[in-house]
Image (cartoon, rainbow, N blue to C red; front, side, top):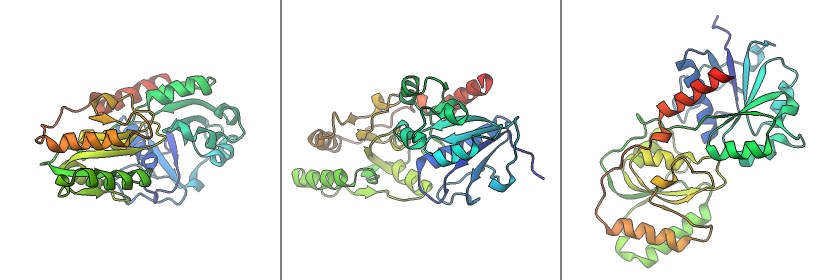
Length: 300
């Protein structure tokens, strides 16, 4: 029989293409890498198909009351949190997007009402929010990272890639307005990466000069990080929580209506020769993440 995991991390359906699910599996892998047995409890006991993961799974029916075990629960799963509240396991919230906290709390004043003792924060912005809104919880910074073996520069070509999921209206507007204003760049492809497996996204980012960021209401915003690791020039909306990497981006929208600024930034890049790939961003590396995880394990 496999050993009883020290950590159990709970996931919604791994069928969904959702960055939060991917990084929950990545955290499970990292815990095992540090010699701390961890497994994902996914409701359907399914392994994701859109990204590769070595994280072990544990079936929900095999969970037992175990006070020496630790549960890690996403910030947006109130019913799960309430179901697990009577269990003796120590509980931590894994918050990857603070905008989803009200969804996870429902009418509770704090996650501590359901037995949580701490919160893992995927960015400094989330840490700051948790200090104000969830002061009863002990806070740990656990910034998301980029797999630089997968997300890496490849031979570059003039191409704009983007993921329109959170801003489809803005994506269509920017595409139409840019082509109308600068017809000399009609030959530059705009490549949407909607609902694509991780390897396809990494390959497209790796060979593209520009990533058009269309983030919205983010706790960190992972896709611009991945694009930076691929050597893309990042232009666009970074959400409201990109402290870890925003200064490395070429142009960040000043506000929701800054379409002209984005269009002009794209044109400036395309009017210039292909630039050399920049150095990696240290705050989004695997080593940086592992250092923060070791700090949590030493303190929790």
